[in-house]
Figure 1 (spheres, rainbow, N blue to C red):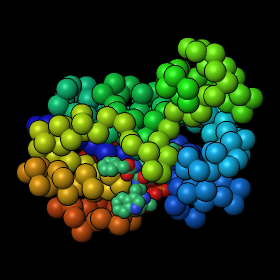
Figure 2: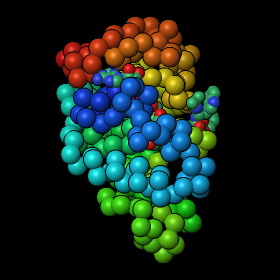
Figure 3: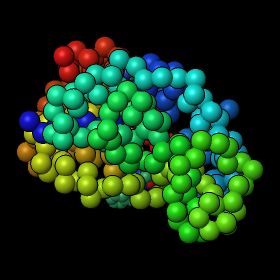
Figure 4: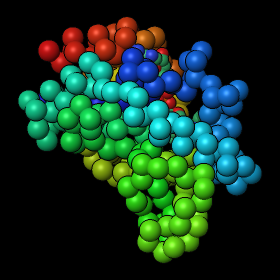
Length: 224
Ligand code: BJW
């Protein structure tokens, strides 16, 4: 059975990573729309850098939880029949042992050069305008996908959805496209669909089945 699992901020919540749209989902009074747009970066790059530099540093204080671990176990069973598509920019799936992970909204531990468009492994701060390791230009930005930008790997994801027998969505509000549209695409391609979330998402009525509760409980119960 071929399975595509889409994950969102809710899967990392029990690891201590704040979500975007829950009560604690604000950063110093900013809405995500105020710090996750190219316009915000143009207007106040240091504010945006600080937001991502802090999140990059916080990654070292957290670890994968039971939901990440369960998806890693599932990959050991299914091999290439499982693909995890994550909207998250943390590396908790990888640290739990998952290898078949697509980061459609980019990665905190990567920097993108605005000049040569090179992508580089990065674990330090970006606020000090370090030079690009590729071309030397002082224009590195977080390698993440902001509103209005094209998410990564959409062709691969669409092909995986076409082949999937089951599409599972974990810990996402369904507020952000194109990820919010994957359930309808998967259904149109013939897959069964399952939502695992703390509460009904914006698109919960599109799923064949929904289970509500914390991912750290629901995902292991589904996998095992
Ligand atoms: C738990 C839990 C626990 C909590 N256990 N669960 C109208 C229609 C269609 C599209 C648009 C439209 N208007 C505008 C657009 C485009 C726009 C968009 O979708 N805007 C919406 C606001 C409407 N989208 C874009 O611009 C995207 N690009 C694009 O569309 O390109 C053009 C294109 C055209 C055609 C085809 C394809 C493309 C880009 C979107 C980029 C989003 N970027 C961000 C920031 C990334 C970097 C960063 O991390 O800072 O991505 S925004 C932010 O939202 C982040 C997340 O990945 C994303 C989704 O959030 P997520 O993961 O769902 O988190 P939350 O907080 O919303 O929800 C958490 C959920 O977990 C909740 O439901 C909780 O209940 C639950 N939960 N604890 C289980 N313990």
